Amino acid sequence: MKIVTCIAPVNIAVIKYWGKRDNELILPINDSISSTLDANQMCAKTTIMASPNFLDNKLWLNGQEENFDQPRLKNCLKEIKKRIYTDESKENIVNWNIHICSENNFPTAAGLASSAAGYACLVFALAKLYNIEGDISGLARRGSGSACRSIYGGWVKWCKGEAADGSDSLAVQLAPPSHWADMRVIILVVNESRKKHSSTNAMKTSMSTSTLLTTRAETIVPARISDMEAAIKAKDFAKFADLTMRDSNQFHAICLDTYPPCFYLNEVSRSIIEFVHEYNDFKESTQVAYTYDAGPNACLYTLENNVSELLAVIDEVFPTNAAREEYIKGIPVKTIQLSQDV
Ligand code: DP6
Image (cartoon, rainbow, N blue to C red):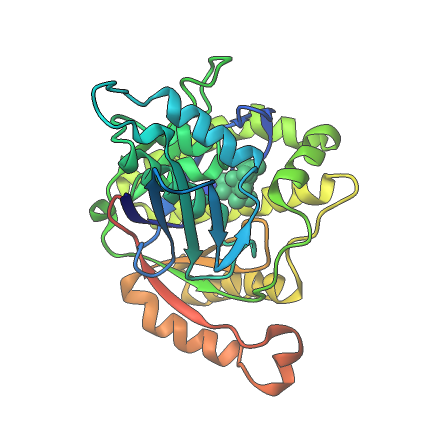
């Protein structure tokens, strides 16, 4: 028997991926940029066991047995098996059945990049199991697009690529976490329940109905990507924050432009947006930026020297008391440092 256990962190996009030009190969219509969070604080953990004695393949997600025959899992396995070097003289592990156990230490499918961490972890663990070398971001991409960015730590760009077979649609590290060592992420968990519209389905509907989507991908994102790369390189927080917030808002504008629309933000999410702008105005400098993925939970980027004051003010403005509990249920706050590579 061979056993491998890995952990992989969540990544939070600052320039969003939304829209595929190829659904089967998971090829995006635009480049995207994210930061990978500290794996010790928000991560997926996967154990894979391979044994010649296992009668079939099995999969458990967060303690519950799931159907192994999921198309994306199958795609990942198919691609991985193409990269395995088989030595006929040795026992051939590739023919053994496997048992996969995966869990997240944070809410699953609540717009907190759970599929990104999950598939990055799965592919990383499979690559270790089968001794696969070289870049594996293209393999993680076949599980969930955004997963390819969780393969690297720090600041990561997923280049959309041009090739029809997706061979150049890969993630690259722009900078390690040490580059911007005082960068912090605070997650405000507004709602832990599963989202109503999966990213995959909503993205498909956006592709076929939103006119804003193509305009954004073709005319806005390319310049935004190079401005973001420059802001990260120069550690220019004000520029970084401005681009991050505008891109998050534009992504949610596309969700509204999708027909029928998808509403990911709720009243609390919107009040956090207003709070961030008021806070920055009051401070007369940009100290914090928000971004939201396909869910209501806020990811705030700020620098270490602002964290304690910001947390104190958040505690004041968004008290976790009974009056707000109806829809807030308290906003647990986490301070998360950017991570090392997986
Ligand atoms: C809003 O990677 O979950 O988080 O490729 O269909 O699995 P699939 O979608 P997924 O979409 C993530 C979208 C996003 C933005 C981002 O992470 O860039």
